[in-house]
Image (cartoon, rainbow, N blue to C red; front, side, top):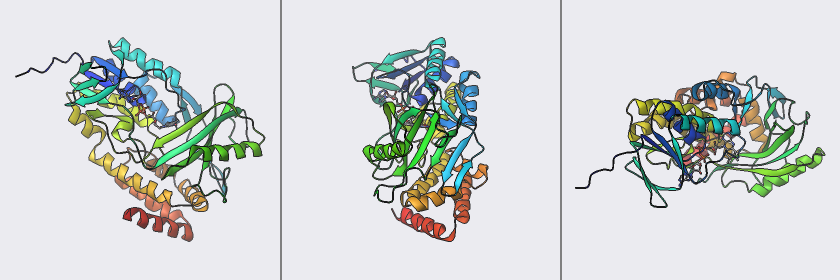
Amino acid sequence: MTSQPRPRWDVVVAGSGPAGLAVAAACADRGLATVVVAPATGPWAHTYGMWADELADAEVALLGGARAGVRYPTTLVRTGAGDHDLGRAYARLDNGSVHAALLDRLRAGGGEVVTGTVEQVLDGRTAALADGTRLHGTLVVDARGGGPATAQQRAWGERVPGPVPDVVPEGGALLMDWTALRDPADPQPPAFLYGMGLDDGTVLLEATSLAARPPVPLPALRDRLHAHLARHGLRSLGEPEKVAIPLDATAAGTGAPVGAAAGLVHPATGYSVATSLRLGPVVADAVVGGAGPAEVRSLVRSRRRRATLALLGLGREVLLDLDEEQTDTFFRAFFTLPARSWATYLAVDSSPAAVAATMLRVAAALPAPGRRALLTAVVRALRR
Ligand SMILES: Cc1cc2nc3c(=O)[nH]c(=O)nc-3n(C[C@H](O)[C@H](O)[C@H](O)COP(=O)(O)OP(=O)(O)OC[C@H]3O[C@@H](n4cnc5c(N)ncnc54)[C@H](O)[C@@H]3O)c2cc1C
């Protein structure tokens, strides 16, 4: 009989995205011997947005209160009905400082970073690397990101010299402008403009397809953005940001999955970073309490959260069927709900009952033709 190798690590984390480093730093903070393994461990390149209250929660839970990003006090949604300030501040993660702070915490707790590719997770406890190395822990946290999906959010972003107050409120964020990119002649699904000021005084503008199956080709979004820039006489600077977020990927992660690997991307909006940062310490506490791979999996993908994700997924399926006019009408109604209601729908941690209640409230808030379109889309989505 061969004996099991003695674990050198308490926690082996596969992946160094926000989900992986959040768990790794929190584990090391709690005295767990932690190693992170990923092919590349540099700062994250994407622009990560979230609500300012979510950023504040992450600062407290994960970074000892240190500032982790930029706040935008005004968050604007623009529809055919005009501008609506949501009254909930938006935020952008400061990738460089958060990434560095999480690595510092990992190393301060005796943790290490290994460059490599995990090919397999065995028994939830051993990471088998492509170069033949095996890292043994009491637990492997799988944070290798999301799998393939048939529905995706896509966006094409470019920076322009700021400020551009007629497009993005000065010092604020433009969450969605459903009027800016309208093109009835374009056969592609609806797109909205997203934007915010960056630290260097430029403004990032992104032509975004919220959810589409098949995904909208990136060049189509680039062309819509360029047409908008031309209308406003705006010149683009630097490299584009290209966004492709799987929205209906199965939770492919093995061992103890977290983040996109655990299917924790919001099925309709593509957001996951705030959830991942918040869950890092929760997972670490569970491991300190003796949780193994199966317990962490049930914590992260609890029955309640799976039910919520399924409802949010139904919401995405409904949106897939709406045209430009119907989408504009939908978001007009959605954001006139009380903030508590729409915020419930935007969080994967909400209870299924609360999400269902918001869905009913949106239906009730829609004008009769919009409600008919929504109900038709619900029936079609349920038949898929
Ligand atoms: C351009 C862009 C912009 C986005 N903007 C936002 C946003 O504003 N707000 C938001 O909430 N979400 C956003 N998202 C969506 C989503 O939240 C991100 O994709 C987020 O990075 C997911 O975090 P994660 O840590 O789960 O996975 P990832 O960030 O994908 O990290 C996966 C990690 O695993 C590593 N890895 C992969 N394969 C292996 C392997 N075999 N072995 C070891 N390591 C491996 C990778 O190198 C990486 O380090 C955006 C996505 C994109 C692409």
